[in-house]
Length: 272
Image (cartoon, rainbow, N blue to C red; front, side, top):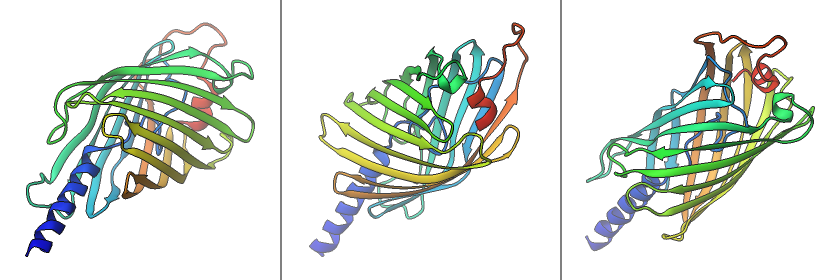
């Protein structure tokens, strides 16, 4: 009897830890990090994961949907808001089945146009910052986030680095994230992608090591499909995640532009 109760408590603790922790909100599918680019003025981007599967220890969850909304509202500026709806596939006693997590409202600024925008051969740099909003059936209270992104594009390879720090909701812990995204040629209709990152929460001492492999397929102009498989170790907890989704770009309004100015090559080729 005691063993049964102990196993139940351990399972509930593992599930709670897995759901309470989620990596920084995705702003570029299917990754956890993002790129040093912004939506062109007047463009709206819907990054949607209709169904993803998240397994952490004994907890099995469906993320449906994982949503990121981007809007280019001024030259070099983008508004970003996102959320993830976690559904417990095997709810444990005392645990809510539905949780709306990773809610935030961020601004992203292109600081240094570079190779990603076709503005020379050097790196591009951007910063994404803003408040983390209270979750539903998750962490309450507000937090804060700041991510410094540097991207470099070559003919057959693109690299994005993320240097991220967060003040978490509720507990007000400092969370530190360092990640690298690798992409194949933006000219190709299908490009292989990968991501590795390390994340550390200073107060709890939990360190996460994560690796993702996947691909992005340009289905048509303005529509990309993506798939990703992520394996991670969060302290002693093993995490597996299967991500499926798409990015749809549409022009909401057409700003007046100087002659010869247009969308960045990254946005044109990747068609995010």
